[in-house]
Length: 440
Ligand SMILES: Cc1ncc(COP(=O)(O)O)c(C=O)c1O
Image (tube, rainbow, N blue to C red; front, side, top):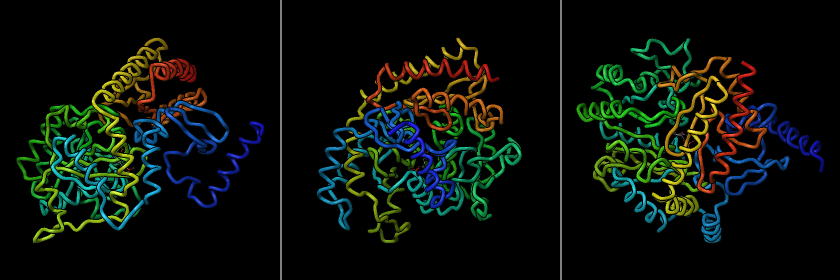
């Protein structure tokens, strides 16, 4: 088949998709011009599209694949489990073994429950906080992404026209038709601004069930939270009987015990997802025994009845446990060191080319911004139309050069990667930065 024929095959597929999927996609983040890239197959850190073009995969299904694609150990174990059934109306040994692994790995986990996605994990965390405190409101950081659920979607993507005063950011709905009641039960905090954040929290101390926090929120710039900010929030929750719920759906990959291990804090609850499924859909919520016991169906008074048809299914738990056993402290350290090499290499490329760009990140993730200085909060991350245009030029260049990135120009690494793939990406950034400097 000629390249021309195959290219036609992709665009024809998109034509068909447009008839049955809104916008022709199931996930907005996969949309590209003129059509999404269609995957044919993937192995390790390489992904091949329908046209037969192979790329190095730095997107890793939005940070969910720590061992890349089709890891042989995961494939073997999941294939064996497939023969034995995929979902039962019975409990399994594997869910207990995996829960034991996570509870021994994360210091703040006494008990936990599996769910089916990061969105669901955060949702269960919020509802558990409400059930525990008997209070209705949650607080979250402006611009932070915590999945597709009414309350956490509030102020996920406000604009300068809607976000209001810095001292009291507005509650901006993401979805048209979001009930006013959902908006009113969310309190928006500026990231890394303890003084303003505490002032805002003080106005709601009677009503707040929890503060929901990501320690390195991707959409807020992929910058580590300042310890001062985190501790101020933690102290506030303790003083006012609210819970601290951490969203480690992404950041769990940064440290063996989660990013929380670096901050010396013990959140009441933590939401997990993405990498803990070893490539399959999953989520988990865990934390202090007393709080997790709001979910206990054997309690005298059951505060939060909870179930889920595919929760703790043996495919996701089998894949997840193997993925995490292989992602031990040594593997994490190697990947983080490799990521540091990428970050320093990109900084060097920016210096050499004089591009107006910068790079942030931590653990095994980085994000490139078309900004002079690393943004500190969502308002600083917000890209002008011209910055958006140059980011698109850069992303298209990297794509054409054989690199699949997350659509914000973020990259996350996987264990099959070595210096070879990292150095190749740095070289592609050099030519990409030259290109955007020319178009400036
Ligand atoms: C920090 C964070 N929390 C929650 C979610 C939601 O996870 P899921 O897409 O599995 O529902 C995401 C997804 O990108 C995320 O990045």
